[in-house]
Length: 98
Image (cartoon, rainbow, N blue to C red; front, side):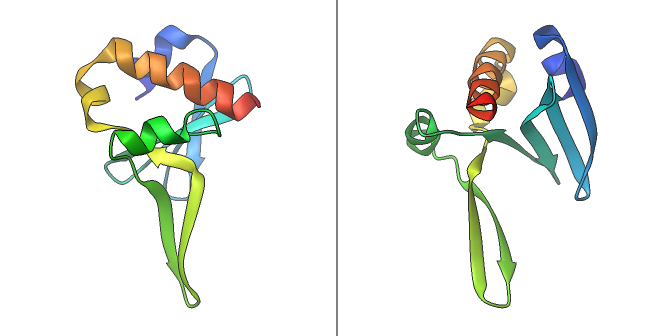
């Protein structure tokens, strides 16, 4: 993902709970866990993620499933379209900055 996000400029990455977190100017906008890319969603973009079948990040606890609705799986078509991936990454950066 480092190469795909490089055109954004100013992107850094680091280890994050067994995956990689990606930040732009100190604002985390994406992470990779396993084989999944998650992008930051906000009130203005959450419906767009859901319309493309994206799912919020989730994990299980003893009390049940926890949904993290700030991060959604990247829609599959983004992996084959670098321009669209960058466009959605910019939306994720805007959501992280809000």
